[in-house]
Amino acid sequence: MKSFRQELQQGLDERKKNALLRKRRTLFSPQGTQIILDGEPVISFCSNDYLGMADHPDVIQAFHKGLEKFGAGSGASHLVSGHLVPHQVLEEELAAFTGRSKALVFSSGYMANVGVLTTLLGKADAVFEDRLNHASLLDGGLFSGASFKRYAHVDIKALENKLSNAPESDRKLIVSDGVFSMDGDIAPLPELVQVAKEKDSLLMIDDAHGFGVLGKKGGGSVAHWQEAGVDITEDNLQILVGTFGKAFGVSGAFVAGSEELIETLIQFCRPYIYTTAIPPAMAEAIRCGLGLIQKDQWRRDYLSQMISRFRRHCEDLGLSLVPSQTPIQAVLIGNVETTLEASEQLMEQGLFVSAIRPPTVPIGTARLRVTFSAMHTEEQFIKLLDAFERCAHNWQKDL
Ligand SMILES: *Cc1c(COP(=O)(O)O)cnc(C)c1O
Image (cartoon, rainbow, N blue to C red; front, top):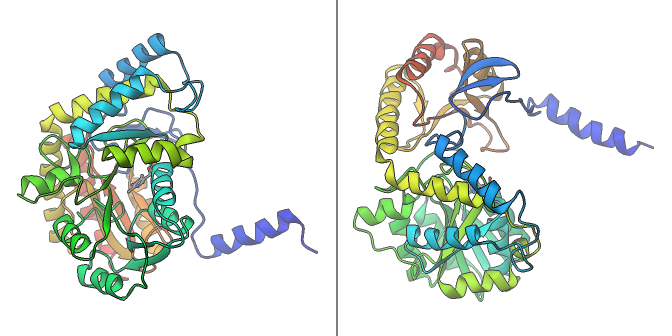
């Protein structure tokens, strides 16, 4: 009989055989564009710190001051005694920022998504998810026990069909990323809002990669579409999720919506209730990030410029890019081994660009995922373009 350890080893060997074994690399420096990775200096194009907040002096100072004023930890969950003034004020600022009645702070985006979905949905309900939704949304939908349907990526016709053909259910909920985390494309909110209305469904958007990056004051996908004249409110997009680990540069998440939604989560959402509140000092750092995000339009403008220059360069090189106006730029390669080689070739030139493989993305769509930060210098950016020019011919054999 196999021992427990042998059984586990078999699973690991299987993964390795398929070139899917993942490795963690250790940063010896703060997160940023110039980092020390496993002891080596490299230029990083693979953090989600799009605006450069993770290492921003003001954010760090706010954290420090928060520590002095409020101590290291919150000491309890929100409902016991861990809800401090910084949490409360942050929630009020987030409600104003998103234009919603209320907001609720969670310890992570994963917990927010699983929490919302399992609180609002049960066996008698149905959830409809974009095929490329973040894993936390898919998991939440599955954990809820609701009838679970995935529709083809941003395919509104396919969504309509699934909604029309679904068995009778109490509550219907359409769930989508606002900006898709592996492709970088923006979800068609006007159509999603319309379909939800027509089919008497609720709508939930997880805008982890939209907040800070899209919209005039970094208001995210909703602001992006509102600025284009689309009417989006908490009555036609009832559940809005954001995270603090991406453009905010810190960690944690929030849900924004009506008073009734937020009160329901406070009363019934187990991943909200049964966990320690984030450190109050962290809430202070997030508040500082929130201010900078709204104020520093130049960060978004600079990102836009880099994105269009990068896309033009890749098109000139004949590379296959996923359509995206956001700092997430996916260069499709296809084959897993070639994608890993591509990432290694870039690493040899001091550039850290991650290879994204199944199961994170669909089979046959392994890709390099380049993410830009407002802190990338012109020199760092040109190094990336030059390296692509030197190597791109090696990457195209599989598509
Ligand atoms: C990163 C991410 C999450 C998870 O957020 P964490 O705070 O890192 O747990 C959820 N949804 C999307 C779309 C994300 O990109």
